[in-house]
Image 1 (cartoon, chains in turn green, cyan):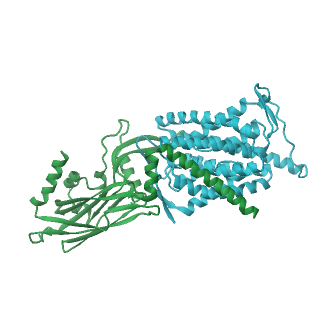
Image 2: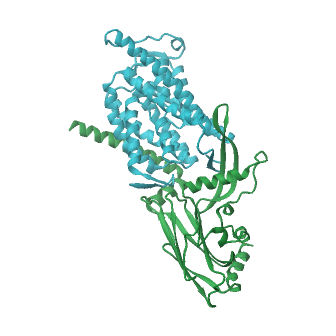
Image 3: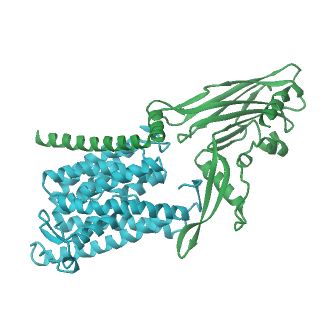
Length: 253
Length: 307
């Protein structure tokens, strides 16, 4: 089913006006090192076309970058017996760990609702929430809270009008990745739209991964937890003893 | 200088971590508490995921206690025999505590219970210590600065069987109370993610009647083993021990603990106790306010099936 869809998507530009994306990325992989403190990615490209530019319906560009998705539990606090406790909880089936949408203009003008629904482009649509427990009537409030919290941490970004488009051909934008990134492939999609309809789309991935010591420690902690735990204890005790002995030497000298 | 923590998956300032470690280390050396009850909430505050904070804290306590206990060994203020008896109870308690913790986790209210545990225990222990040391200070002042007379405890503790002689502490008591204290502290330390010194120290002074001088070293000795056990449990089941975070905290902490031990040795026992009581009450008050006041954000996010 999925490959069929992707073949259809690949054929799509051919049926459209013959406009195609030629893409460039300032980097296609982000290495998380010890001193990692966020990263900036420049996404730029050009529209390749055989026919002359359609002047009546201006071309618009929408770019999305999505981190790996996972289920998230959203809990709500309520006052019970004078203290604030978690009472209701809704599990959101899949929510991207990072999601940014950049457009050339106001989102609703650039993309029609139907296309948004079909390709799950806006932040609301990128989150999949199938159903809430029967005792919760306001499930939307929970997904709204998820978006609000992640937006405040810059994990979800709505960058309306942040893509520069020159001569209907050259486009570029900048996405800031925050410091607390999860590892994985960050799916990057570029949509060309006219009159709210998608005329072409292009997809690539930005790889975010840990390197060096970060990589080594992470892998060890997952694959050899006993070794990792013992190593942590030995390092801790050695540091404790070493500092203690060093301090003693300092005082005696 | 920002540093990316591999397990916590967040980027934080390395000097902030060193500073926090140092500050808590001074307190740890002064009072013989691991400092976990202070460090764990501080780590939440700077944005470390709670599960990682609790597990890493256990690892860091091992190190800061280790350097502290070495200083106490040199001054011969560790009662090894009492420490071993407490440890037997402590390990049993920690294993029990993990079972209780996992049960509460399955009920989905573990955060609340951890916080309530903090408020109740910190409040009771801090309040009792504060009142007691205030009275001791007042008594000392009234009698013209001479030290308060030591209370001889001749209660139920001395009526139990299985008596053992603890030379360093100068006690001849049953092993049952120390084992029970150990189990109790073990359970609490597993649930609350702390070393348990803040419960252990008063329990040793007021229940077992140990001299304040040996209490700090002995509790540090016991805490090392219980927290090492907890670290291994967390590392193998939840994969939440962040060694980079732990090393940064302990580099600050170890140095701080050395200064703390020196400061602690120069201060009077009553002053030490009243300061610890004040600190315990302060943390308790902060946590209580968090529970009582309406939070700015009513919603919070968690990974499915976890914290």
